[in-house]
Amino acid sequence: MRFTSLGSGSSGNGLVVECGTTRVMMDCGFTLTATKSKLESRGLAPSDIAGICVTHEHDDHIGGVARFAKRYAIPVYMTRGTAQWLPEDFPAALVRYIDSHTPFAIGAIAVEPFPVPHDAREPVQFVFTDGDTRIGVLTDLGTPTSHVQEKLSGCHALVIECNHDLDMLMTGPYPLGLKQRVSGRFGHLDNAAAGHLVESLDRSKLRHLIAAHLSQQNNKPELAVKALCEAVNCEPEWIGVAAQEDGFAWRDV
Ligand SMILES: [Zn+2]
Ligand SMILES: [Zn+2]
Image (tube, rainbow, N blue to C red):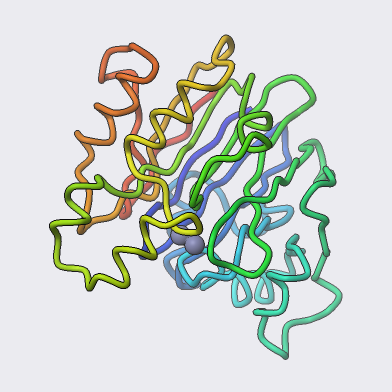
């Protein structure tokens, strides 16, 4: 299996997982043109995408889904709560409702959704597996739960939210209400909390650890890397960072 991020952060998220000839996209917060060119830069055409798994209805995740899916007739997998945010003219034939606890298959890839505390209607995150290798992605999470820990334990690759540095957020320019929302139980994971979560997991198979969904206002890549390094006791070079502009290149797992 291999995976790549097309961009990550509050201005748009998208990730592709490949297993054999099956490619699944997770979220699409980009315009049609941007999505196409991002895929091209990874050697893919839109028609290579077998399905889009959507985590929740926030614009940085769902913003580009309907247009892209409709244009290329790609099925979209989402909870009923998230599906409420699809435009009314979205073709029903392309909607695949998922249960937030029930795994499903797209070609060669088994997708395991899991519910997360986040300020959306029915948000999930995903583990992608071929039955052996596991790639866990977690980009929007207020508070880690024991269920989240269970799902992400034993993964070979982890893409994990390091949204903000708590000091930068609290002393930064956001209004108080927004600071409270971002740092709250249904908001976003800060660097330290992401570190603690990773530290609590079974990491015996972990080969890739990538910080994602970094706030451009309230975080710096080096702070996210430092927090994850301390958690797993590794060299900084070993930690990846998913950039807003261009995510990260293909990684083989
Ligand atoms: Zn987000
Ligand atoms: Zn969100």
